[in-house]
Image (tube, rainbow, N blue to C red):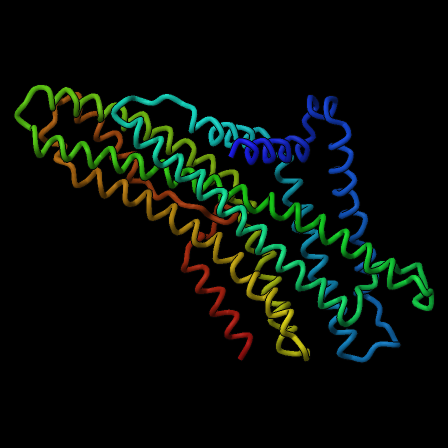
Length: 374
């Protein structure tokens, strides 16, 4: 897991043009800047292919080429927009990465230390599984589109070389596969960041809920003993501090990733529409259907994350409400009511700070897809 955090920190530092990193690791920085500039400079070439029709191709072949070209332009635009946004909000990304990386090494109060370690280990374990799934998903999506081009026709991204040139297809395939590989690698890093951050925030909510449950157990079994009252008072203060940290990181997460989520949902929805159009209008679309399934899974993941984040914050509020807070001392009641007031707010991930990201949005996208299909 330490290697994973180092890779993400390295990626964010390079994308955000960290001056210290630029002086120390110039070789890796040049590689990434070359890849990023290649993506930017490659946009005019497919645009040329999009605006021109090859007379040697049939109508369906031209439709297929233009479809793949549009997918390519959206993917590259996706990478450029997210890279620019990370550059603007690089400090917030640094803070979130440091918080996640140091969470498993921090020392908490003994009353909740075991729970924190348990759920932090769970977050690290699921983070590694999620990373493997994302790499597999995006690899399948990129490979399916590339294989479709290899079987049928390449996207004409070398407009200044005549098609009669014997090496034209070789140049076209090489450039297209290279740029597609760069784009997929960038998209994996961009899209895994919000998922890993949300996963750690969800695991912290589990820790808070476990603390509230222990608070209720102590009150039910040892309510008349002075030792239990002191333990409850100390546990409540620990829960209060942990809950404040949870809300701070949750607000930072929602603020930082709101625009990234909007870009993600917009590009994924465009992918979905184009692939749906291609599977309906073109023949031999089995490979494109694989990419269509990947686009649906991509939308589902971000919507499912937003749904879980909203549900867990509501669960914390419900657990607080089920506690016999009125039996506590006056000082403890103040701490508890403050926690209850903070938990009462409506927290959740919103695309652009406007649209709620949850399973309802996923169902709406699927309903639009079915409407267009009919």
